[in-house]
Length: 174
Image (cartoon, rainbow, N blue to C red):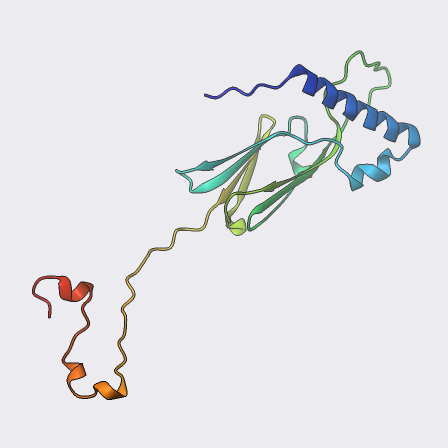
């Protein structure tokens, strides 16, 4: 199993940026307007192919989000996931540390293959949203016969002459 490593500096910078954005929006009173217009946070997602299901699987970390408020759209090679995590309001809270992102989110994931959106399924369990996006069934190949059209100058003996091909190379068929 492959472990992901993230630098502590990246996490700190991301948290500082998000907190500064949140405070600025809150101070200007624009948080209610902008919350619907632009994502406040970007939930993490894993995207992988399942051979057994012949599907792309997208698994997102959406802990604390009411699954009935998650919107999913799938089209050809794009999955869009939107929703909102609400901050439980408590009049007596004074933060010492704030690491959980609240507010509107949106993820647009470009998939590596065309999917069948009509067959997509999603389930939410233990804070994870798992979306199964089936791929189209592979189409079988077929042999295409080559029809030979005679030229006007070949009339007569041309019908007796067969065209060498896979059928004539098999023993016994002429």
